Image 1: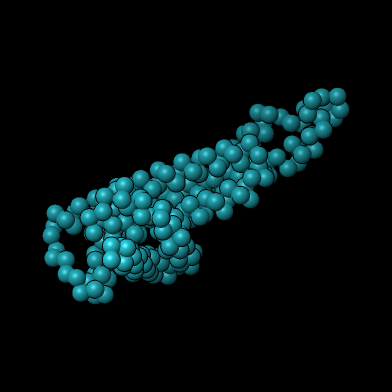
Image 2: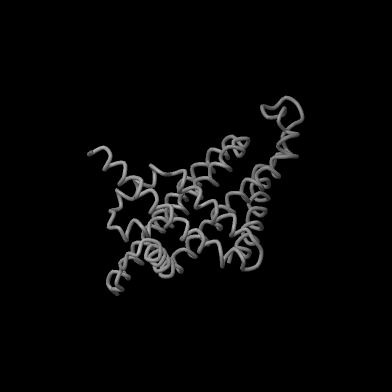
Length: 233
């Protein structure tokens, strides 16, 4: 899906660029005397190249984000069980299997994945518009979107723990924002593994991200409890 979408959107980017050039027809701008004469060399030589790469970057984020969240949604049952199993082995806490609760966990995971996907698309759209107005901004908007992707990925991995510990959506969002460095770190690990060839990344990336998110959540929760007890004392 990912490779196919990249190929498709790359071709679409080229077609859009060629269409825009035909409509604007920069070659008809006079060499002198016109308002845009000074910019004619840039518009006829580099505008198409820059537009193609801006569109390719945009479509890369769009297709990569879609495939990423489809994968997270399809694997949400496995992630919910894996996160629960990690906590049981580490803390000895037993969560008896209940079909209703399990389906609720899956539903929560799907809803949060869709929420994060919509928010990430919003940031992609805003950054694209800014970059379209001022192309050099791509050196800022590109890295920013990568960090945003890490954040929402990490948030999705953490949310299985939020749900299991009966944290509401607003409480979960607050905790994610409070510990966004750890959240981004989990998303970074996932993203790096997904860049590995063949199925190596798909086999290990999500598993390590879920395990890491569960371990991090338990550590943060224990630290928070100790801090609260210290304050009360």
